[in-house]
Image (cartoon, rainbow, N blue to C red; front, side, top):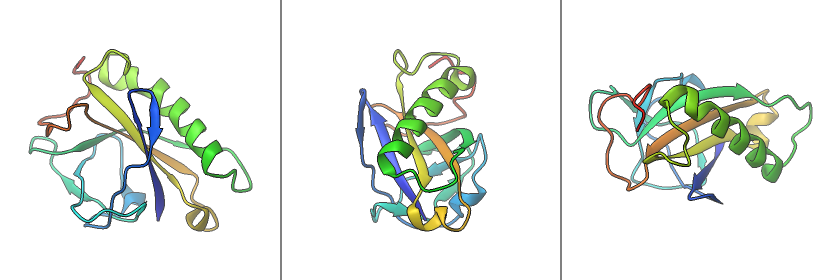
Length: 141
């Protein structure tokens, strides 16, 4: 399972998601998925959908944390925020600060870290929480 965190209007806050279908460890850049209706603070699975269909989120970057021991959630969230913020512009074609989109991320939990999980998953969503249709890659939104 991975810890879920969000960045909205410059404030880091918890987004709580639960299990649906599709392992979070198999998410790739460009994958789209929906928020589950039953919320929890850790997530193991998501409901992947075709990006041409209505969806809540889109994966725009993946990167690994370069630490040997679990750095703690605060440090993971700072690293995730920095890495996802840098990766947003090249994917969307606009700074997330001026975009109609917001970012959030999945980080390894202390449990998954012990199993070798070091990957951060960066995802985007509409700031108004309206469903997205089509990929946001190179959209300039």
